[in-house]
Image: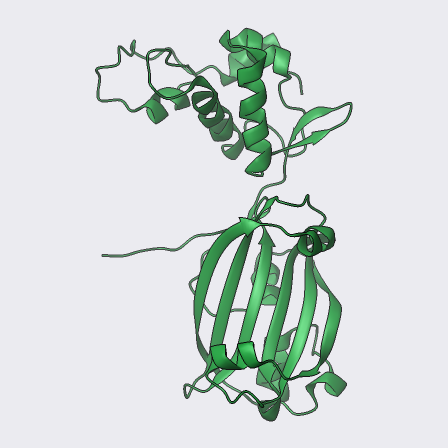
Amino acid sequence: MLFSGNLVEQLTLPTPPRYNGTDDMTYKQVATLGRLDRQSPVPLYYQLKEILRSWITSGKFDSDGCFPSERELQERYGISRMTVRRTLSELVTEGFLIREQGRGSLVVKTRMQDQLRHLTSFTEDTQQRGLSTAAKILDFHVVIDNEVAAEMGLSAEEELVRLQRIRLVDGEPLALQTSFVRHSLCPGLVERGLEEGSLYKTLEEGYGLRLGRARQAFEAKPADEYEAGLLGIDIGQPVLVLERLTYLHDGTPIEYVRSTYRGDRYRFTVELIR
């Protein structure tokens, strides 16, 4: 999909009232109109990034479809090649575009979204969306881990089952997940294996454990070499890290899990009510 005259017409919104820098409109509102405000203190590359990002998220470009070239953006907005390159580079870094030799910039696939309303497993989340999910087990054995035991409020000598998996959706790696489960509450878990690939299903149906609640924390960070290699992304690309401590219904800690999600394919939302 090239940035042809027809596409320009499709993406150009009705001409808004002239913005003179003194109206109540913010630069972000101006940007969403598809215009650059050269009187604004906000850099042009950032204004252009807001325009293109809003078009990507609203679906004006097909996933994996061709994106406007640098020259087309230069001509359309009357800006320098350096400004356009900085805009596109930031959109790549933020996970909205990818670059391919000979094809230019491409829009990445739509992010999966988790609303964080219920205590569910990765498998349950994806199946509820009608997606095909799978996992590649990297490690599954009994360990002693003093740091994790401390996070769970346990004795340093308590045995834990360490389960590390790459979580795939429609065949694409989406997350690296490392879970630690108390071995005393699910003896023989490694030998038994997982029921239908789900740890939570195994704990509930196989061992009769009743999961109750969880506490989660999030942070963003650049992917290290190990994570990047397993997730099929570049070193330094943004990832979302989730740490969850899960409790049984009676308040007993049962699991500690650290999940690293691709920032370009996943996002979390939380509904707040006052």
